[in-house]
Image (tube, rainbow, N blue to C red):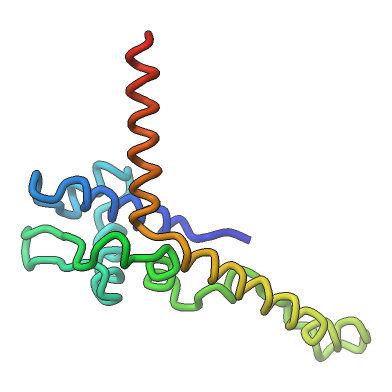
Length: 152
């Protein structure tokens, strides 16, 4: 079970866009340098975020920027933009219903309820995490890093 790394790269890009607003034109090349991810992958992520209405991307090398406030962007929206199969893809059930084994014939029914609860819980948690809260944590990390470097 894992969240795709595309989600963490997307959050990285969105935080970078927020922090760079008014200071730099945020291009896929700049984001690739910051993330260490191939620019083509970055462009695909930006395309998905744009399609989801989370960012705008100017034609050519115009740069990308948030088109909503950080308070209006949730981790679930980011994840959902990048993972078309959504949360159910995190916890799949193997296909074995045609086998003669009674466990195989019923495992899907047995797991549907618990898995649905897990999916709902994950979605609810992700919807409660905003880009604003992640930015707050980012700034706390910067402050902590600054204090550690200052005490050396």
